[in-house]
Length: 178
Image (cartoon, rainbow, N blue to C red; front, side, top):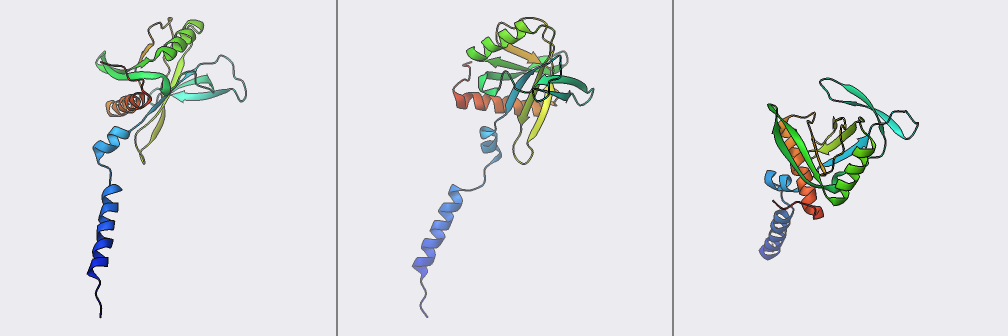
């Protein structure tokens, strides 16, 4: 009987290297790669087939809003996201890059007293969430490219959204310098 210990050791070595390269991701590693989306939709006064959608926003006090199907702003234009303390709670602060700032200013100036319906997808597989976060009414022209609103999330979910948006902004080279 011939034993081939050398061949066995090479297979064991290859298997261990393969395991090290494709090993499990740690929670910190998943956190660093977590991404989130945020899309802003404009409220529509009329219902147009194939161009508008009726959506329900807020889980605790549902509100029905008719929105145009295509978002006018998305996560690729976010330069920074953060949570700010406000009235005993928190709000989500989105700062847009130059192009996003221009688009936000144009839409807010052209659509006074309409709502911006905000939708986000956040979290990590298998617990990925897709939710309407809010629909703040636009009362004035937003010149500085900063949108602050109270999201329909708990603090942990809001932190996931902020982390995901900031990771994406950094990946896209849009992250604002502190």
